[in-house]
Length: 74
Image 1 (tube, rainbow, N blue to C red):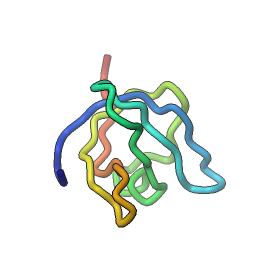
Image 2: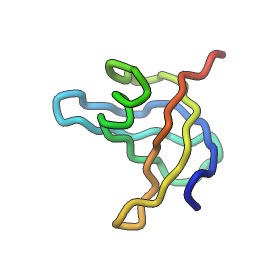
Image 3: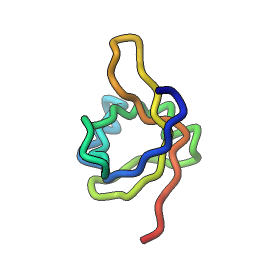
Image 4: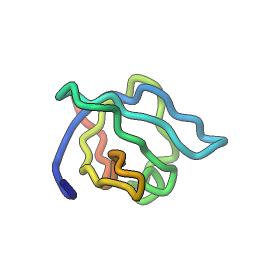
């Protein structure tokens, strides 16, 4: 399931702790997002309600993680 493109809305992001979650538009489980993915995308932080396109990876626990983030213009 690695590399599948998805889009969604930032549900929560805690810059101090360095992680958050994105609610996917396809109704599938929320995707975890780590600060390292945000920084690699050249973004300083994420705000609740931000719209994003991203790729999904399955992490070592079998959960979805968002990588290769791109801001989505409405």
